[in-house]
Amino acid sequence: MNILDKAKNYVENLFKDKLSSVYFYHNFIHTTYAVQKADEIIKHTNLSEVDREKVLLALWFHDVGFTDCNAEGHEQRSTVIMKEFLKKDNFSDEYIDEVSKLILATEKYHQPQGLLEEIMKDADFSHFASPFYNDSAEALRKEWELTGGMCFSNDEWNVMNVDFLKNKHKYFTDYAKENWEPLKMKNVKKLEKKLDKEDKPKKDLDKSDKKDQKSDRSVDTLFRVTLNNHTRLSDIADSKANILLSVNAIIISVCLSVLVPKLDAPKNTHLIIPTFFLLISSVLTIIFAILSTKPNVTKVNFTKQDVADRKVNLLFFGNFHQMKFDDYLGSMHDLIKDRDYIYDSMTKDLYFLGKVLDRKYKLLSITYQIFMAGIVISVLSFAYAFLTL
Image (cartoon, rainbow, N blue to C red; front, side, top):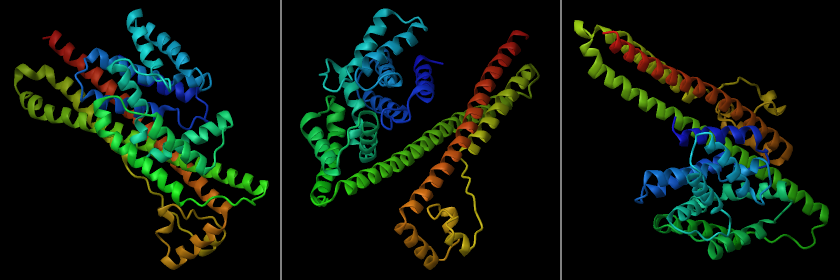
């Protein structure tokens, strides 16, 4: 396993074990996205493999400081955690210092020095050009509310975001300027339209009404961000399964076309058992990868009384596809009128999405273990077969 894979696994486990659940934005999903976008920039530059490794390592660790401190100074804490990790792999002090500088380059108002720091800055703020920018912004807004007590009205939040994106932020690399800046400006225009269309709150609202509105908005944001995180985690699992499917399909194709036809020759009989191990492990890996991505739609039989008693989740298609349209329309009208009913339905959705994710990741973990064990056993078998000739 190379150092980037080790770093990814280390950071993922660190976030899982130590990161507070209030960090809706600064978490493993943001980190993974930043790494992917940095690699996207690097593919369009002449960066060496060593420099690429430094940048991606720095991005894997740039937010791990949130696991044991607040936002202030988290970059410095991140460098400490990164140093402890790299020293275990006997990296030189010079190499570690260079990665540390790249992590510190992600400080909000730091002016990057050189291409590597420019890539770091652009990757860290790549979500400004994302089609999911609004979800990311809402995640950050919720995080600030819970960690720093900073609450903003919709107008205040949108004005602050427009100002930062238009006047305070800029991309540095040529690739980001050409490809991400136009997408960022599209998001700015969407925010400006919101400001134009959004009704101003009435001045005569009493304090209790304003408090209720703020509370409702926080709950809505909580559900939106959590559902979005669940969806992204599901996409990550499917992506990993697809990689394993592709790799093992190639292995099987090579075995069937190159190795298997030669096994009937007496001089190649020593290769039969290693080839068998390789094929079996690849087939098992493919089976479990397919199982991890296989849809598991539950179908529930229910009566009209169950709908009336609110025992049916109207937000899940596995339930409402059995209903006639008129019944579904009437039930949805009842749902929309009752905020508690809405929250109960969304909570059910979150719970069962979590159950699906649990199943996916358990199967995916088994798949990786089978693949890893199969490769190791196969290589050892081939080595033993050649040594005993």
